[in-house]
Image (cartoon, rainbow, N blue to C red):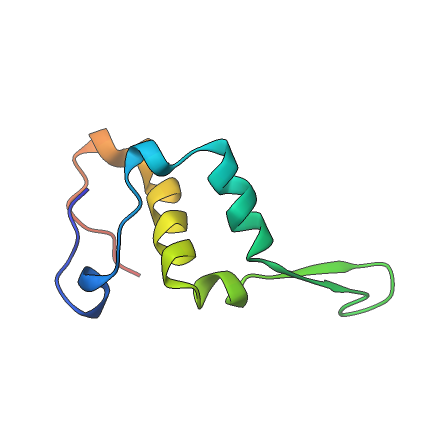
Length: 78
C-alpha cells in the first residue's frame, strides 16, 4: 500500500502477515469501554485510545483499506 510522506511515514506499518485474528483482539483491547454513557444501559466504545496508539492506528488503517487494495485507488481525501 502506498503511504504519503510526512510525520506518519516514519511509523511502523503492519504487514499483511501480521494482520491476524490475534491482532484483532489486540486492537479491541485498545478501545476503552465506558459503561452507562451517555445514559444508563448504554456501553460507549471510546476509540480515541486506539487512535492515540501509533501501532494500533496504523494496523486499523491497514485493515480498513485492505479490501480496496486492488481497486487502483491513489488517494483518499476527507
